[in-house]
Amino acid sequence: MSKASQEAYRMIRAGILSGHFPAGQFVPEDEFAAFCGLSRTPVREAIAELVAELLLQRSGTNRVFVPVWSDEDEEELFTLRAILESHCAARAARLITDDQIAELRRHCDFIDKAIAQADAPDVSGFVEGNRHFHAVVLAAAQSERLAQLMKFVVSQIVVHRTAEQYSREDMEQSQRDHRDLVSAFEMRDEDWAKALANTHIRRAASVYRAMRLSGDAG
View 1 (cartoon, rainbow, N blue to C red):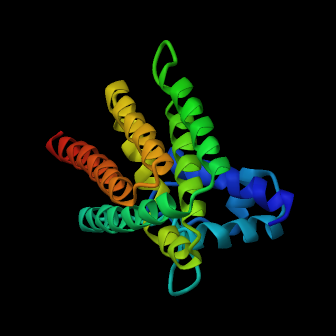
View 2: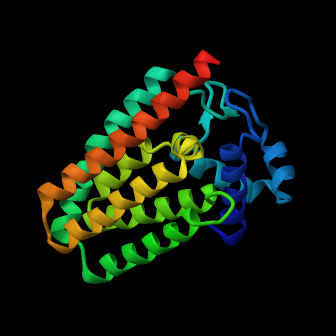
């Protein structure tokens, strides 16, 4: 993507995750362009990328909207993600480089700082660090097929909503999972890495499920 398209992508993605563009609402290209302060060409490229990542969808008439995830959709996303993340971690444990392990440590340090903010954890920083951490693990797995599958099941909307409900203790536990994964990678222990990744995603699913049930009760 061009620099302008990348900027459009960043802004629209942030607007989706923040709820500025509500789920189920059709959004014309002109509205996205006005939101970004850019022309329609880079916005069109950004929309195509966001559709590929399932952050946006197209209707049968080619209109663009933010998808609505049902409870069943979300449960299945977590189940599929746990399967794929476990396989990804096992491959990464076998193929990861020392440089990639060092990069994972840097992302862990970044996440630690986001969690340790005095007033309240920096949720956006936590989500961003988490995204970069898992992107390195995916790159270490060296599988284009896996990367394509992950793009379809890792809904950043669900990831962001889950993180918003995390207490500081939840974030710290998530971070312990990350540190343990780095240790498993250092030891090239595929079974340990696989088990850790599965637990990591299932724990996130549990938090999300509790959040959803609490909302239903309210």
